[in-house]
Image 1 (cartoon, chains in turn red, blue):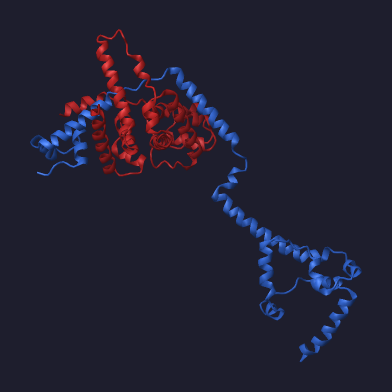
Image 2 (spheres, helix red, strand yellow):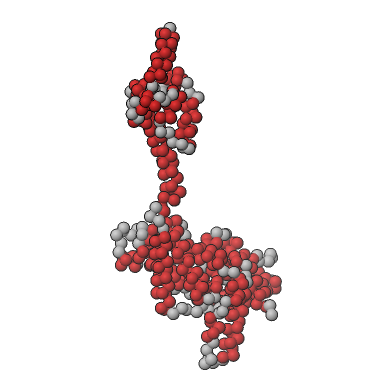
Amino acid sequence: MSSRVTQVWTGAVRPEWKVTVAGAAAPDDASSTDLQGAEDSTLVRAAVRGSREAFDLIVERHRRAVYQLCYRYVAHHEDASDLAQEVFLRAFRGLARFKGEASLRTWLYRIAVNVCLNRVTAKALATEPIEESRHVDPRASDPAAAVLREEMRRRVRGAIARLPKRQRAVLLLRVYQELPHQEIAGILGSSTGAVKANFFHALGNLKKLLQEP
Amino acid sequence: MKHLTQVELVDFVEGALPAERADHVEACDECRRQADDLRAALSAAVDVEMPEPSPLFWNHFSARVREAVAAESDRRSPWSWLWRPAVGLPLAAALVVLTVAAVVWRGGRAPAQEPAGASAAAGTPVSDVTEEVALPSGDESWDLVAQMAAALEWEDAEAAGFSANPGSADRAVLLLTAEERAELARLLSVEAPRRQM
């Protein structure tokens, strides 16, 4: 059984960011070259002091993870891009309030979840064109199977879009961002037990929705 | 043995449940069915791949964020920091104190700035003397001071340690008309013997 679980998790897309939090303070006159290898907390301090280069580096480090989370919500490239931009703009506005109690990534995810939950409606999600469905390769060894698999993915996306907001947030953060339950609890302002219960219900509801004709 | 809770089922599917509880699933059809359902849903969700944007997209994205941040900075007023509660509230309190202080100070200075003979020439009656002082109209702070002072007797004020500034009595006398001075002299002549008693 554990081998099946392992197989399931290795199929997930692994994020490519590197999280580095806390550490020695950067000197006030740190140049952009110095900032390249700086830790997130150092970049935050520099950005709060007005360094645009530091904020650029924050964006560069976390843009992919934030975009992916937004994309999982809207399943549309342009909308995900707009949402991710809004996330970073809000982060810029509130950067001085970031105290480093959680990692910068967790803080950005918290903003992203709020932005997505406020902007995205289930109706909009269900009607969004799914870009991947356009790319079934006719040269695949079994094109028919590929079409069926793509159809199944489309149905799963539609089912996830119909999940209650909190269950959807937990599912996306756990399955696609691969965050530990504890970190998800920090993002959603909840307890670890509540997050696991939400995950349980999310998977249960997903199965029910997939069984609908 | 007790069935697994929702939290335990999630832990079981993720391989994080302690062995003594995980063993229960082997012997319990209900818990095994629930665990299989969770796994099936999880497997379906994991199978939904994430399309990777083109490498050019990321530079374009960063440029868009940079522009948005620059526009945000431009929109911010150079005085926007004044509206932060940590700065604005103490500053507002300080301004109120300064305003009251300025009003009181002006109240004491204004009569001296009037030409000495102006009031006399105009024949201003006694009751209008205070109007010579440029009092702010509609100033709540001054109104408060005026209300508090209205009920104050000179004797009480003197006993409490209040006194006029040096020279202010002389300046006040200079502002009086001949008629007012005569009335003042009369009052003093009545009051002086009482004080000496």
